[in-house]
Amino acid sequence: MDRQVVKKTPLFAALDDETAMRLVDSMTPIRLARGESVFEEGDPGDSLYVIVTGKMKLARTSGDGRESLLSVLGPGEMFGELSLFDPGPRLTSARAVAESELISLGNADLRSFLQEHPEVAMMMLAGLARRLRRTNEDMSDLVFTDVPGRVAKALLDLSVRFGKRTDTGVKVAHELTQEELAQLVGASRETVNKALADFATRGWLVLGAKSVTLIDLERLRRRSR
Image (cartoon, rainbow, N blue to C red; front, side):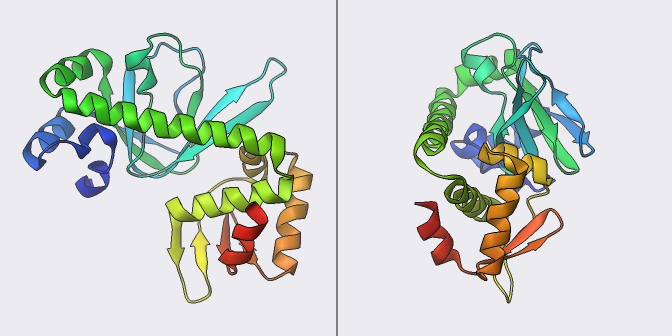
């Protein structure tokens, strides 16, 4: 386990190394194959999860069975912590989009830990506030930004979190299917594919299998505004 990755999460950021590692050792490891879920919408919210390797998607399903992808999370990110502050059924499902390794901590154990380390609770609340701010930005984009702009913004966001610099650009192995990428943007697969093809024709990016290499970041930034 890469403990430096784990320590990036709000749960550990305020702790000294010894305390952080004791907490890691008390958590339960979980391994998931692509497509496996750690919880489903409506399940009891009784644990939080930290991603060690891989990628997870958080999604909601409408009454007619359509899925809306809310976010894609990677190593060093945490999810499920909302249940600690607002107990109740899960509002989303959490499913692996790549082979993933997680560690989990039950709410009862976490509450006991936070009583001893209240500074961690403040870090966790700050993390939730950042996620809420991102959600508000996404809602604004759905109203005020066209689909190509949202595609450009989503690719840039994925590149910051998952991108790796290569000789030709920034390669983003997002692991998402075309349908999942469309859900993330909040548009039809056909419209998103048309935007991607247009960007590729302009030389801004090169498309790959569940990946994309961003060539002209500046033009994508301009298009995302």
